[in-house]
Amino acid sequence: MCPACPPVLEARALVFSDGFLINATYALLPFVVVGIVMHQFVKRLDRGGRHADHE
Amino acid sequence: MPITSSGARRLGPLVGAGLVLGVGLGGFVDGILLHQILQWHNMLSSVTPPTNLVAMKYNMVWDGLFHALTWTMCVIGVVLLFRAGRRADVPWSGRLLFGSILGGWGLFNFVEGLIDHQLLGLHHVHPGAHQLAWDLGFVILGGIGLMLLGYLVGRTGKTAAAPGRIGSLAPATSHR
Image (cartoon, each protein chain N blue to C red):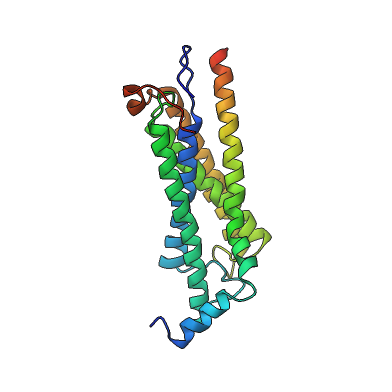
């Protein structure tokens, strides 16, 4: 395969067509959800740990 | 936060670093094992099945973008781990870190399984016969199972954790 062969160019054009933004959003979505969940969990963990240390 | 006179310990920085590393490394396991070695699915293989060269290359690009995201998570995880290691109030426990990595891996599988496989139908773990069973198995074993395992491993490290080694050599500083 070569960087400028017809199948490569065609595939690249397909990737960066109108559907790119929606597909990129779909690909990002699990990472965003996981990021929010982890952030909330770590916040709670530290808050709980501090309460436990004061008790 | 500086270490307090009561010896307050913060698990969050180490656990957070482990979780993010788990998401990144777990994503790589998915991409390398299921996408590339076994070739069970690709990122958008249920939307554009890789039945010809152009469709295969199309999926390959999306697999690459997925790997770019998992790589980014690994970099963020390493930075968070480095920052956690410099704090005196963070217990330095391999088991807590390993448990958090397993937890992050399981969380990613769980969320990715629900969103990409069930909700959006971008791809399925093992398309074809018994597709739903494979998807559910992935969410239950690879998601909930790994999170549970991570919790159990992390719990043992939580109690056995030693104070931060690097942080204990220098005055505790805030690295927010």
